[in-house]
Length: 148
Image (tube, rainbow, N blue to C red; front, side, top):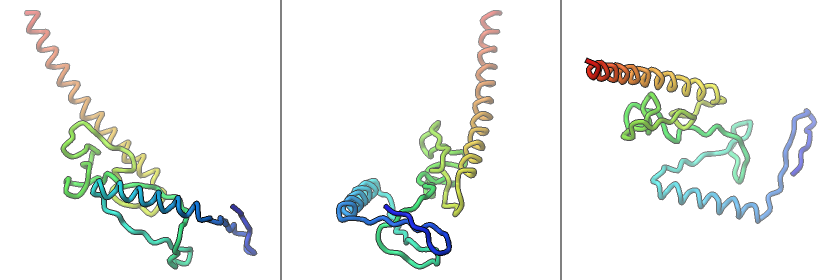
């Protein structure tokens, strides 16, 4: 690996990829694709572009905010969780991380993930506080009936 400075002062990274690394990349990608296909996932082809928007072939390195693998939606035909993060058809199981964000935000997603998790947590506190109050009332009614 090598870093160089351009005439304008920007950093230019360089990494020579030997055949061993290229084979590792290909076999890892094939393994992931086979897992996705067995689990009936849709593989979406992406195109790498440079700063000018020109497509770039070959192996590239990037950082991403992986989101949307358990999309939030209004029905299970469009996603995995409801607007409060509860998995459709699996009551009591919630997803509150970036997996529930329905689509790419094109910006750093950390604050959106945090805000959504807090929103879902608030909903759960409200939901289970009401449940707890109902349970306490039932318990008090049972206890008062026993004491009479």
